[in-house]
Image 1 (cartoon, rainbow, N blue to C red):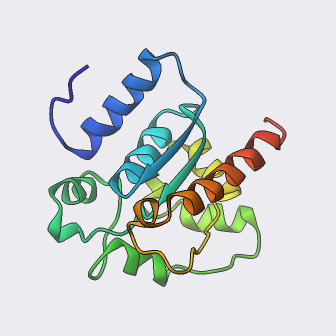
Image 2 (image 1 turned 90 degrees about the horizontal axis):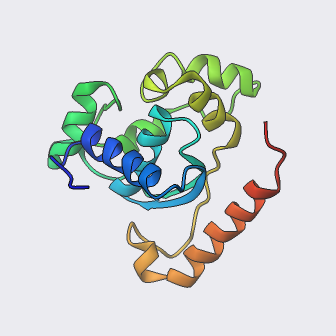
Image 3 (image 1 turned 90 degrees about the vertical axis):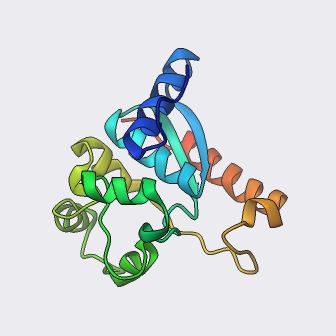
Amino acid sequence: MTLPQYTVPAVAEYLTGAVDAAGMRGCLCFGHSAGGAFAIIASSRSPGLFSAIVSFEAVAASPASHAFMREARDSGAIATAGPSLAAMALRRRALFASSADALARLSQKPPLAGMHPEAARLFVQHARLVEVPGVSHFGPLEQPRLIADIAAAFFRQQQQRPRL
């Protein structure tokens, strides 16, 4: 397989094709930076592609500085406001009355609005934010063992939960 172009839809489609070609649908996925964003987008377009995703710093780039982020914004795959996606995420409500309330409110706006409904539901139900003190956007390079341990613990937790 060759990647025809470096755009959000093309990379998400390529990732889906690579996982399917390898017969690994339902595998665990770790994505860093754009890789994390691509994994989330690919999974939202193809439910069941991954059984769990750890996305490290997927919402860190400035859309103005990356063509692929501009295309994602223009295609509706993500939304932008202010200087970066991170700024937008920080303005979001921290707590909701329930998972159902979170899903109802978040599904009305990108990026969840563009997701397959089941992917959006699973994202709201299982997404976790873990702050890792002392690391930057390059945490997997700065503290590989620490980041690997955090990801492994999350994957173990996800594998132990009952399947729907």
